Image 1 (cartoon, rainbow, N blue to C red):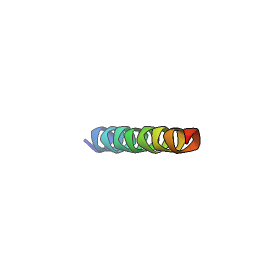
Image 2 (image 1 turned 60 degrees about the horizontal axis):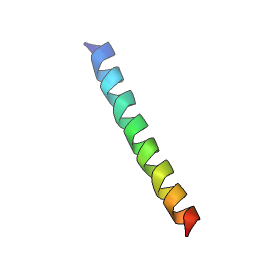
Image 3 (image 1 turned 45 degrees about the vertical axis):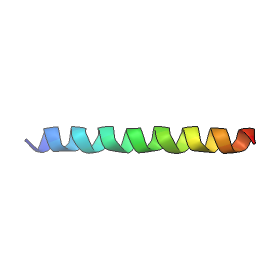
Length: 30
């Protein structure tokens, strides 16, 4: 069960990182 929780947390972190990267890219474009 702990493994599943860790996987979910990692997935969430990855999503946030992707969002931040996209935001930075858009901001840099301007």
